[in-house]
Image (cartoon, rainbow, N blue to C red; front, top):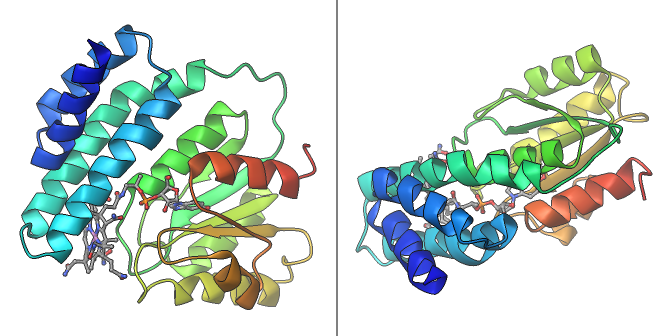
Amino acid sequence: MSDQHLQILSQSVIDGDPGQARQVAAQVLASGVDPLQVVEETLSPAMDEVGLRYEEGDYFIPDLVMSGEAMKAAMTVIGPALAAHQEVRSSPGTVVIGTVQGDIHEIGKSLVATMLEAAGFQVHDLGVDVPVETFVAKAQEVDADVVGLSALLTTTMRNQQEVIKALAEAGLRERVKVIVGGAPASPEWAARIGADGYAENASEAVQAIRELVGAD
Ligand code: B1M
């Protein structure tokens, strides 16, 4: 029963059907499936399939947009369930997160932000296409422990490095840790640009940030 629902959920993201995605996501949760498992094993692979179809020329930008909307619709149901799964007593720290300038991919970044909130962090999500100076100003304003930088494009990932440089110029680099993520990023890239951490997915991001703030 729930396997069939998971398959319909995956298909509704691939087809870009937000209404169906939201409805089936609710049914999937009601059947007792772990929400994180739904994200990692159904929704994210569905988006990968969408990316593949785009690369192969079978899908176009409007298809990417609609699949993104379907994934977001599913996350309106799954996100709160992710949070409800955690029981947190005190905040392990403050995180400023956003997708770097020039890049409007928001789903992975928002997923990381949701998971961090679920783990008790104070999260300031700056959204997408965030200018370098906005990261620096917000980190200063909220006395951030960690700045998280998402980039999905090979052309925008260098802006992760620009933020790190700007944090250093503002004298914040000693006390603010930086973690980078997004499809083109890697541990090697993180090391090359002087980031403190890298995570491949949202659960790894939570773990890495807990380690960066000394919560483990
Ligand atoms: Co775009 N896009 N897109 N896109 N898009 C990709 C990224 C691409 C790989 C597709 C492809 O060709 N196969 C390709 C990039 C190629 C490259 O640079 N190497 C691409 C391209 C080319 C483009 C445009 C340039 C297309 C064009 O206009 N010609 C354009 C750029 C716009 C811009 O940003 N300036 C563009 C636009 C879009 C849409 C706006 C239409 C839409 C986004 C809608 C939205 O976000 N609301 C879109 C989509 C949907 C995708 C794909 C299909 C899916 C992305 C996604 O949401 N994945 C994507 C292909 C793919 O990724 N397979 C693609 C699901 C999400 C849960 O995963 O975002 O990877 P992800 O996040 C993961 C991890 O990466 C990690 O954890 C997350 C959860 O597991 N992570 C972090 C992410 N951030 C992190 C931060 C961390 C730690 C971990 O710490 C801070």
